[in-house]
Length: 222
Length: 146
Image (cartoon, rainbow over all chains, first blue to last red; front, side, top):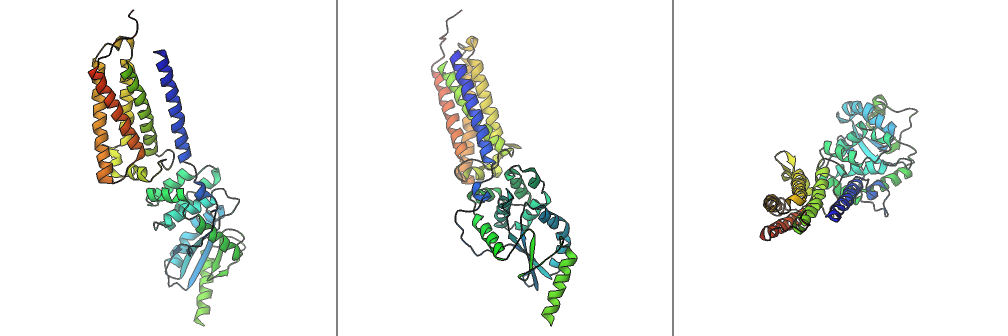
């Protein structure tokens, strides 16, 4: 009889360890989504965009989701830019990934945004990642938080989980990063207006982009 | 006694399977480890919640109850009492019926199979069979009578 209870305790301990390991393993950032891909194939994707397709000015932003300056720009400047320039049809905003190698979960965050983008929720996920940017300061595995953010963004989690597990868009993010290198992106955020690199001495604001849009529109009229 | 020991061990395994699914339903651990997408489809379906609680919670309670009753039935004083076999068979029958309902939902409504649910179905079916066998052959005391 005593031997039976020993067996029960041993089995219970083994199963408890197994469940703990499964939960821990399941919560980890998928290596396929968190790192560069083994092979890079360009699928022709050139970033999600916001605003009218007929807008005369296209601003391309190369961003890193773990970058605090990008977060400041997205949460402080971008609402005004959206209101004054994008929603009025003057500017179209295009987002490109430029994950910096110094940031551990930057590619993982970019991948989460791409998986949300596959469901038409890129902008919502972009905002969730930047408006809850404390994950970038903790250094802790953000996979669970990102899943919660995806849910809050209205993303279907079954498809999201599969996308993240497979690292479906890892090559797309690497293509964007390589494109950034070719465009001489040297930090994040870096902006281009109709393909021309914009230089700022400080973080630009809505007035800066308004002046740029005015300038381009004036030149086009001449 | 062997029947009750087998039931206790099987219920313990089932308890941890249900516990894993319940903790996952509560948001612990991220994506479920399944091998296919079936588990996520089942776990995120409307039928993953029963009377306001995750289905896996009922698994935890059910397996926990069977495990505790089996241990109580293994006390020397209870070994000759046949009523414990009846109680275990009753609990196992309830579990099998609930599992049959869930398996029907997986096959014909959700159209997805969760491997963990299949594992749990196998365990509760095994418990049910053992509990029926224990009803057919009443327990005999194997310990020396004090």
